[in-house]
Amino acid sequence: MPNMVADKVVVITGAGSGIGREFALAFAAQGARVVVNDLGRTEAGGSAAEAVVAEIRGAGGEAAASIDSVAEWDSAQRIVETALDNFGRVDCVINNAGIVRDRFFFNMSLEEWQAVINVHLNGSFYVARAAAPHFKAQASGAYIHMTSTSGLIGNPGQANYSAAKLGLVGLSKTIALDMARYNVRSNCIAPFAWTAMTASVPTDTPEAAARMEKLKAMEPRKIAPLAVYLASDSGAGVSGQIFGVRANEIYLYSQSRVIRSVHRSEGWTPESIAEHAIPAMKNSFYENIPSPQLTTWDPI
Image (cartoon, rainbow, N blue to C red; front, top):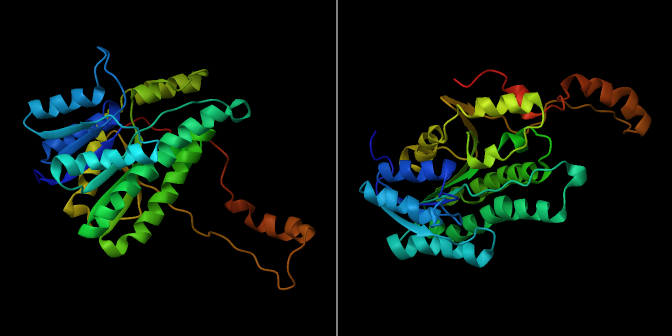
């Protein structure tokens, strides 16, 4: 179905390169009016956001650039105001902006922790919150948040990134619950793609290097169709879900639910927990393994 998001106004953070750029191009090609938000610069030194806007306009689409930071409340408000000033409304927010500051937990600095949390988690809240009154007033809207298997499953050397990305899932779930009465939905996508950000992840083991080679086959443009669908009227019934895209595969992730319980009428002591509770539940424990070990097949 062509033009699934015709005339919708979509705010995409971190849209100057990588996955965000592919989102911006795909939405514009489907008839959306796009706010391209990014702080980055091109190799030539110009605004990455402006470059994507020029690309969209050159193809006959509509777009406006925003170079405000997601990581501050006031500047996040200005990102959404860019949509209102240029297009008169906002229909979808895609929280895609991100950075990495990878380091093993025991060496991670305060700055490395705060920088990643501020962009991924605080920034997503700020931009989403800025759009919320407009979504509520018009009784429609869509949020799409980029999560990661680093948070959903785990990955070494990414305590800051993992915490932020799993926090985003909690944020999305609560937005979906709080705003359901206003016909606003919220979903997450965990992307597998080769971008400048993933290229910066350390490859200090043969296994990590081999995974990076696989990632190079996962094109960022493959993520965009799911985002377009979720923002469209066709996706109006989908909310509170966690999806993944890996090349030509689309995943639906499980969510936390009680899987076992044990009961003792007289209550528990540390000793009875050791003797009864843990042995009864141990077969249902999850292995403490990093996410790459759960997607061992090559991208399809």
